[in-house]
Image 1 (cartoon, rainbow, N blue to C red):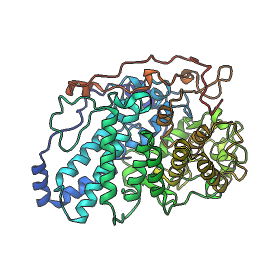
Image 2: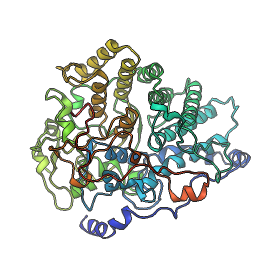
Image 3: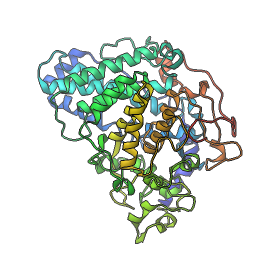
Image 4: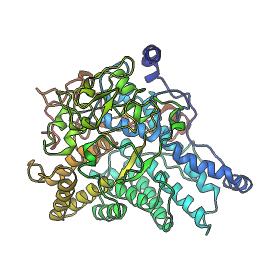
Length: 540
């Protein structure tokens, strides 16, 4: 580990901010008849392409194909998006490969981090389009229909990971603004493909997911790494929520949640979120040891989890911590308060943890040369590992949980005029599974802000904070003036809700290849301690 870290220190500054415009642009033209001809002769090719579409979602080197520890597909995107928001705090350290997200210098799209976050979805879109071109669209073979349906759902998922970050949402007329280029199985002109409007992007998302829902009826998946009908309902619920189609979001979230139950109070009282078989997961990434060993540092275990015996988080003290502003708002009676150690490095969740013969809160202060450093205040212990101190880093990742669907239902009800029903649903969930003393009125927040608070706590670290802040028209609030909290000085700033710096930029490779792209240019690079008077309605 010591040699590895020393090497990283030498290359980190250049590598983390390296230009990526020399990489090949996304897309490519393969004729439909060519694919169908090859696949009819070599069916295993089509199967390999289909399986690879899912494997790439969290595989190390999924974009660059190399040894970068910050390249692990959609899991890395979720991590990056949360760091760009208010609630996930990383140290300002030479070992922090995600410092561009903390400082929001990620608007230089030729840095590796934003390049990967643009390329990964379009790689998935290209893979989905290849699947769609591989089989006759009018096939009556149920196996083929299921593959086509999953490919379209995956394409929708990819666009759901692009649209919220390249343009403001539906609110205040945002649906007519330019978003990202649409690439389908019918696209042929990649050099003159302008940005589609937000409305057009979501129209494709809804069309794809509706097709998936209709054509996945009867499909029984072998494991939760694949997309079934309920997963497609959940993805469409997310899309409808972004579109402010509240009643439709409620209906789809309810359909997605059917048959699933949230983790219990007891289950939430120990580190978890590492096994795809957890009963509250609707969809997840199944990380195998073979996949993880491509680069064990490019995994959620190495970065987000605090218990890896061979990872960045523990080995370099770049722990994923909660912003103390949010932590301080969590009631002591809420079991989720223990998902992070407090300022004294204590958490009841550590009572179930043993590392190198050390148990309980002493684990937080345990130091092992070149393996683990002392926890920082507010370090997360939410994300556990199958083996504490293990080195395989093959822990799974949740893309969708039933708890998210319950909170979508609550928000949709509240925003569509059914506040009493929304409050009852929210209180039933929290009292039964998180905090027996909970009352939605206790905080003094509006009901919609209270639901956002519950999303920020429940879904912390899972990739929703950034897009939620944007779709709700909220400012970025990382600190309060006079109360700096635990955010490092270089990342300590706030930003207004309408600041153009929120919007991601297009890569040079995309602009050089697709001459129709007009880039986002608004906003100003944030500076330390700016807008200290901004408030978000939750951490006030």
